[in-house]
Amino acid sequence: MAVEIDKIRALADRVAASHGLAVVEVQFAGAAKQRCLRIFIEKDAKTRAALAAPDETAGLKLPEHVSVDQLAGTTVEDCQAFSDDFGTVLDVEDLIPGQEYTLEVSSPGLDRKLYLHEDYVRFTGSMVKVRTIQPVNGNSHWQGRIANVGADVLELDLSTAGKRKSKTEKRTEAKISIAFSNISKANLVPEI
View 1 (spheres, rainbow, N blue to C red):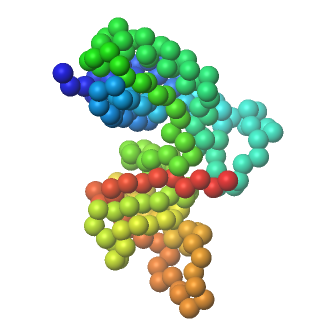
View 2 (cartoon, rainbow, N blue to C red):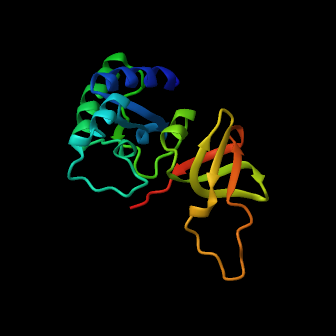
View 3 (cartoon, rainbow, N blue to C red):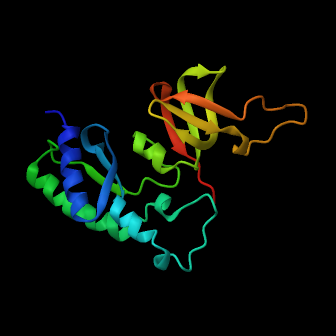
């Protein structure tokens, strides 16, 4: 009997919403006794907005290009509460056939993957690494700051990539446009 990730995701979304959380990613991997269900969660948009309120961040000093919203605010207690409730409901619903599996719940981390168009919009101004399916200007790996997010295209500002250039090398372009359909993987680059 196969694992139905869509049903698991829908169940995880319902449980997360009851805790003021949102599901970022669901992964299921492994075979036999080493099966693992990983759920990555973060505070939902409403809760993140409350965390970003000025009175909540009075003593918090963040770099200019990092907002409280970007940090997701997920705590160990959030992960534990979600894990307890979700694990119970998951077992009752019997969505994972067989007896043995491990449930792991965590935040997406500072180097989180970007999946949806909304993720790119939310993290506009953040440093990202992007891998493309087909090379763009002869390169499949890019690092830069998200400058603009269009309907079909992501624009990266390469001038802030932070890579060391040799004295003789000069960067020819300051920005690069990459079609979303050409992105195979995108991750935030932690800037702490």
